[in-house]
Picture 1: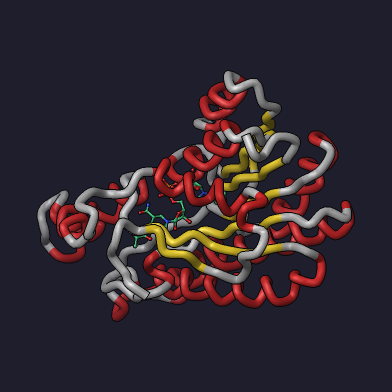
Picture 2: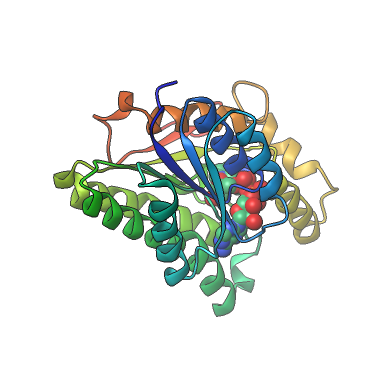
Length: 259
Ligand SMILES: NC(=O)C1=CN([C@@H]2O[C@H](COP(=O)(O)OP(=O)(O)OC[C@H]3O[C@@H](n4cnc5c(N)ncnc54)[C@H](O)[C@@H]3O)[C@@H](O)[C@H]2O)C=CC1
Ligand SMILES: CC(=O)C(C)=O
């Protein structure tokens, strides 16, 4: 219950890792702002958080649109009285042989994964400073932010960029008491991996499920990651226990990448 009295914003909260993070932060006492481009499934997550007796609002936003991100933060402060934790979770994967990558491919995934993370950091930091609150910014990185993966090259590049932005923002925002860190999951059983596996099968001729099984077989702890595994670490990053950590993109992958 370390987050009682705190307001947390989670993007990409309608499903997968974002839903897991939102539910865990609510369990730990935070009030929640659930943000997603897909409104259909946000209502279910909202109901789960209301059942935890927490305040919760849902906001539609495309994180690649800077004005929508800043408007979302303004509405957060107006409706819940402030913001303490910003989780820039929303993101998309892209399976493509590098030889086939187009400018449109690059622009789309960078606008969401990189620009969207930067807009979220900008808007949150601006709000923290206006409210004179220390604040915590927590970004979604990946093992692909530490190692480039075949057929996931541009996606990997976006996550390397998130790691760099996390380090730079940590240095720039430290004077205001704002910490900036990132979580780097491995293979988490969400819709994103269903899509990756399907597209890998199309690109390589492998059977459906083969890519997912190959990646999971390389995990030292012997099982795929769950959204709750990720959320447990993000809950620590959101708590005061992480106040002396900043600029770090931390691998929590069950033992895949060893840095
Ligand atoms: N699933 C995995 O194995 C891993 C995922 N990650 C990262 O974790 C984050 C969450 O991944 P998952 O939950 O697996 O993905 P997911 O695809 O299951 O869910 C992503 C959510 O983000 C939303 N979203 C997508 N684009 C958006 C936009 N432009 N604006 C607002 N919302 C948007 C989607 O509607 C969806 O609800 C992503 O940043 C991903 O790169 C990192 C490492 C591993
Ligand atoms: C989706 C993702 O980040 C990986 C490498 O699984």
